[in-house]
Image 1 (cartoon, helix red, strand yellow):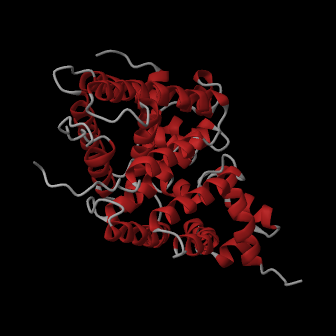
Image 2 (cartoon, helix red, strand yellow):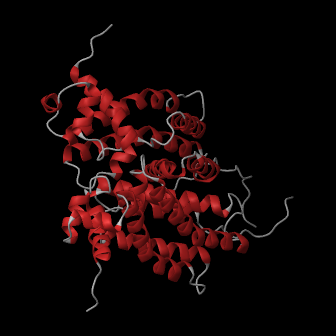
Image 3 (cartoon, chains in turn red, cyan):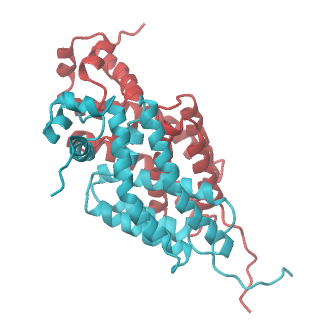
Amino acid sequence: MARVSKKSEIVEQGLQVVLKQGFAQAGVQEIADAAGVPKGSFYNHFASKDAFGAEIVDVYFGRMRPIMAELLGDKSRPPLARLEVYFDAIVSYARDRSGQGCMIGTLCAEANGAADVLRDKLNGVLDEWRAPVTACIAEAQARGDLAPSPDADTLARFVIDAWQGAMIRTKVSRDLEPLETFKRVVFGGVLAPAKRRAARPPT
Amino acid sequence: MARVSKKSEIVEQGLQVVLKQGFAQAGVQEIADAAGVPKGSFYNHFASKDAFGAEIVDVYFGRMRPIMAELLGDKSRPPLARLEVYFDAIVSYARDRSGQGCMIGTLCAEANGAADVLRDKLNGVLDEWRAPVTACIAEAQARGDLAPSPDADTLARFVIDAWQGAMIRTKVSRDLEPLETFKRVVFGGVLAPAKRRAARPPT
C-alpha cells in the first residue's frame, strides 16, 4: 500500500471535517486530531488555515474535474443534453452526501474575511468550472438550439450561481427539492432547446 | 432616548458581528464584548448560540419585511414589474453593504450542524419570503404575462435560490456582477413578460 504523507492525511481528513461542519467551525486542532497529527504539524504544511482551505478546494474540485470533462465534453450528445446529464450526475452526487452542500459554495458563503489565498482559489475554480458550461451554452447558441442572448458567459454564471443557491438551501430543507426545482426551471426554461418555429414571414 | 435592553443590545451588536464574520466564526465572547455585557448575560437571554441565531434571523428578516410588503404589494404596477423593482431595491441594499452577503443565505450555508431552533427559523423565513414572490408570479401567469408552467411556487423557489447563490458569490467576486447577472437572466428570461402573440389559429 502507498504510504500517505502527513500533508495528504491532513487534507483528506480535514476535507471531511469541513464538509461535515463548515470551514469556520472546523478548528485546526480538530483537523489535526482527525488526521492523527500534532497541531504543529498542520502549520508545518500550511501557512494558515486559509492556505489549508485553498488546498482542500483544489482537492475537492480536482475530484469534480473528471466528471465535468467526461460529461460536458461528450460530443456524442447535443450540448444542452450534455449539460442536463452533467447536472443529473451532480444531483446524484449530492444525494449520496445529503446535507453537506457543495464545499465550494459553502466556502464562498463563509468568505467574508477570507485571505486572498483562499478567495483567489475560489474565484479560480469558479472560472474553471464555468468554462466548459459556457462552451456548451455557446455551442447550443451557435446551433440555434438556444437564443443568442443573454450571452453564454452570462448564462453560465447565472446557472452555476443558481445551482449554488439550491445546494445551500438543501442544508436547511434536508431534501433534494431545491435541486429538483433547479433542474425543472433550468432545463424546462433557461436552457431549454428553442422550439423550432416554422420560418414564416409576418403578414 | 429609549433605554435599550441588554437583549436588544446583544441582538443588535451580534447581528453586526455575524454580518461581518459569518455565524460560525462569531464567538459568543466576541458578541458579548461587542454588546458590552458579560458572557453570562448572553446565556441569560439565549439558551444557545443557535437560539441567538434564530433571533437575529428574525430581526434581520423583520427589516426586510416592510420593503417586501411595499414593493411586492404595490398594485399600481403589473406583477412582473413589482418583482423587478423589488430586486432592484435589494441590489441597492447589497451595494450599500458590500461583501456582507445576505444573512439568511449565509446562515443556511453554515447550517450543517444547526439545531432545529435555527433550521426551523430559516425554513420559516424562506417560506414567508417566498409567499409574496409566488403571489406576484401567479398573478402574472393569471394575466397571461407569463407561461403557466412551471407553476408559480416552483419559479419562486428557483428565483430566491438563484438570488442567494448570486449573493454568496459577491463575497468572493467582491463586486455586484453576480447580482447584475441574476437580474439580466431573471428579468430578461425566466420572469420576462411573454411577447403577446397575435391569436392566430394554426393553418
